[in-house]
Image (cartoon, rainbow, N blue to C red; front, top):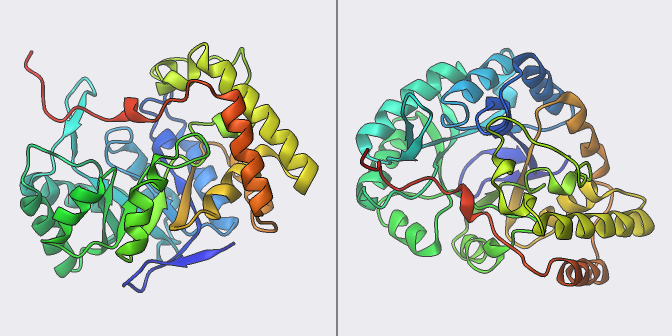
Length: 331
């Protein structure tokens, strides 16, 4: 395992973190708690110390499962969770990063996670309806009180991080970033480098596309977000699958690896990336971790990857579809 030091803190975390959105079940076809607990524990046994969750992942369910899985191992784990989303009885989510919401959510998260502090507490999405000063000062107050060890933001632009930093100390940023979604390398990641922030990028396998397990006939059920993800709809889906197949061939030919290892190594080797979050919901999905740390990508391989993407993906699309509404809509 490789490790990273969260800048300007004493937090040392594994460079691969376990993402637990799918474990919460919401937008992933429902939960399987026993498998989820086994997955988290397998990840810890494999050397992962960073576990990332959020109240919105199953309306608190992901945090509850994480808390259950970490019993007896809390002191060896870096917990990153989030704040600033609310939901109604139908599961509809919107943004609310007000001070009142932050102070309410922290207590709920601490209870569900069965801990008395959060290592990295992140504003999940910027909330235009709440003054940034209010959001940032509420986060700083939690840090000053010892309830959180580091302050982070997720899905923020450089301008939003600039404004946030006027009122609070910022330690981490969390943008989406993978071989297929690279907007962060144009703005968020360079900003993090320039301002000494640690980037915990999410979506390293792009909702499973880069796992190498997807096929043309792969079907998704229930509320699985991939039923509406533009990457999983024709004709784009076939383009991405062709790219994955060629990337897999490249990984095998040059390194004796598979596309899942290549995708994770690529993220870890990018400038400004502190850790890459990898979602899993079954123990066997954690097993490829062992193949990520014994190779690195040279400039020629990176250039070949870019050539494959340019040739196969003629209509690329980003992760914008995942953004939650900014305010409650009138009914």
